[in-house]
Image (cartoon, rainbow, N blue to C red; front, side, top):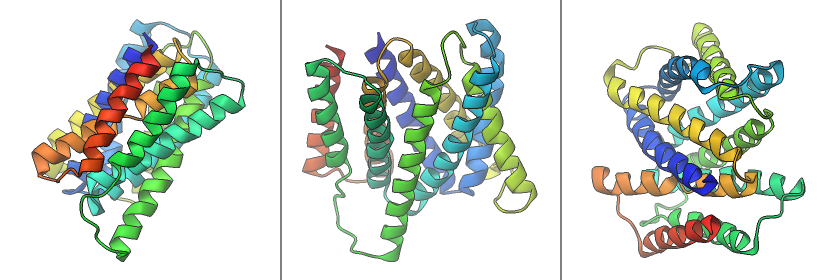
Length: 277
């Protein structure tokens, strides 16, 4: 069950991130984050009472911390997608977003089965292969900027996943309500201070709304998966989300896939099967 939920989260994250990257090429990335998170907050507030669970102070506080980390990470990530190749930025961020929870999980005593450990190693390797750029652009300032954005967003995502795992049991989706409330408040405040743009994404309303719906759904699936499995296992399966982003970038935007990237997609599928077993 945990594997299926995590893979569902990965699919939703991958498609949502593609839409977010498309929107960030038309309007400011901060505006995409703010308004997509507003959409997600509305959905989560409506879902929370139906999903059950207690809105404890710990759940909301941990969720708020996760929201600040996740909101900042998404802004950096979308900016990276806007200035660099989606087929490079997304997998690099995913590698770190998986690596941080795996390290934390193993360090805190989690011991996945042998097949799952092999799958985790293969999955991390798959992400590295998927991140191979079809055409080398050289050490240009733009390329290094995109790489820096991918690395920093990946660390923020990893800490976001770890924080949600610490929200406690029996809290439903209330940690996600806290997370979205915090991220929306953060970007509204930054927009009011004119640090970032908070204007409605008029040139990219549909992808921004789609991104918000899918991202909220992915978070719900991820949180539910944590209730059925280990952090180190769930996080690495969820980190396979670049497969969706890369495939959409290939077929919608025409970005080429190298032989290594295709191999990475295949290895990622094998890893998912091993972890599920």
